[in-house]
Length: 189
Image (cartoon, rainbow, N blue to C red; front, side, top):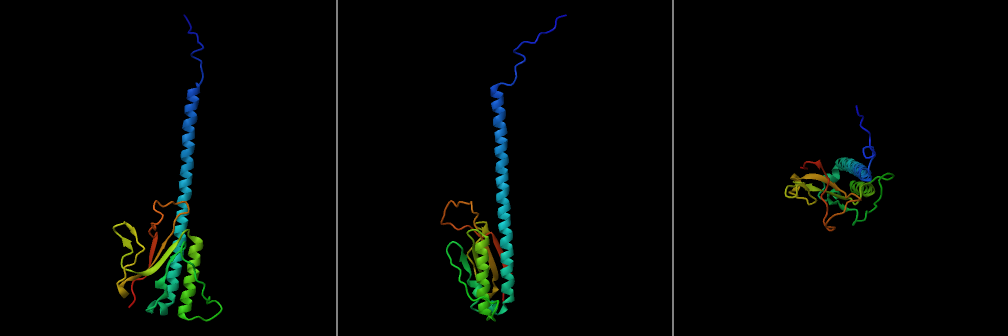
């Protein structure tokens, strides 16, 4: 009976090509894991911005509801808010902490504090408070900054938007749509 002898050709180990292929596959896997981690961080950041925006919008809605005199006024200062952090400066009126304020002064103070919070919390933020029949734009399939007001029958809406710090707009002059629109009051008689 003959035993097969092992030749040196049958005992060869990994070739250099096999090692390079395995390093390439491992590198692709590591790059994929890093990309997933970056996407996860960006998603978490946007979720955080959205939570902050909801909190700020509901805070302003509560302040507006508490100042009923101004909400019923024909010169409602809340409805004049159209703020862009990159273009507009915030006015700093008298605060109403230590002094008794009129409803108009209280509204101006509330608006100023709110805009400061928005500018500090949301990057490249924009805020609009208006009467709007339809905050949703069907043609663009998104919320719209423009307000369609048909008088006292329109809802009072707070619209907020921001741009991610890493986001590069293909058209720098184009304004991104609002990410949030919260109705304050359906209508005022």
